[in-house]
Image (cartoon, rainbow, N blue to C red):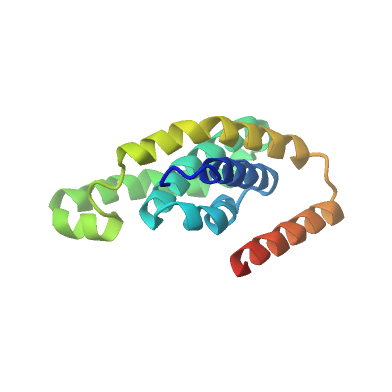
Length: 161
């Protein structure tokens, strides 16, 4: 953002909308926000913020809905992580750091401006996630489908415009 007066409200609106959609549907935070963020932020800032905010939205959603989790159905994922994480760490010990940086992302991706945007966007993120989770249990399947279709239409229209 170069400081234009309309960019900060657009950033916050996109952050809120993405969090509402993600809280409501469980996915699509990055799709919603990138439709606007890519016009006002750099691609590197957009990717960094999508990762950081996406982890927060999904983590908060899982925490709020933890009572509905069926742990018996999750055990294959936990077992996979228990095996995969140590293997991944082992691979990192002998991998070429230059190749890891090239595959994972550019060095210095988290700038002061990105951190500032992260902190400014947190209230909109949490408010949107809260609103999305409140709507989650109140919509039947038909209403949910309509909401998703309208959001896809709006997202597509924004991309065209």
